[in-house]
Image 1 (spheres, helix red, strand yellow):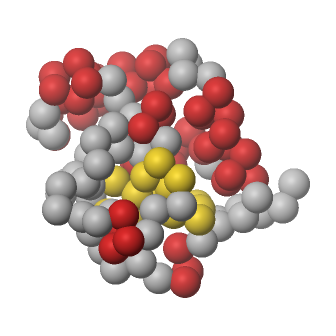
Image 2 (cartoon, one colour):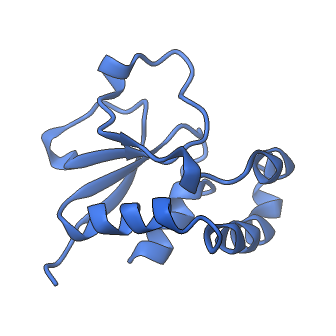
Image 3 (cartoon, one colour):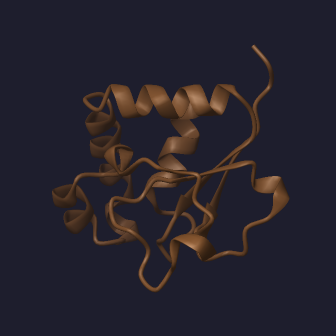
Amino acid sequence: MAHTELQIKRVYAEPTQEDGKRILVDRLWPRGLTKQKAKVDLWLKEVAPSNELRKWFSHDPKKWPEFERRYIEELKTVGEPLALLRQQVSQGRVTLLYGARDEEHNEAVVLLKILH
């Protein structure tokens, strides 16, 4: 299997050539961003945390360890979308896009961990 490059980036950051395939992993489309400006190649909202989990977490860093544990549990049930994400990653450079302001506590951080 070829070495893959996987990174994460805020969807609001300027798209670059180095991004490769840009995959949005948020359940909701980012506020104030047009599809044209976001340059999203694939939107896999099914791999995002459930609405219940997202609302419970509410981007509270103190809840991060528990959020991460619950999210990994949820990911075990998504099947096909996660398989599609793994397939994309195996084909070359991928950038997972997220909308959260917190760059250390968001679903893309968890996905990066489990996809490596």
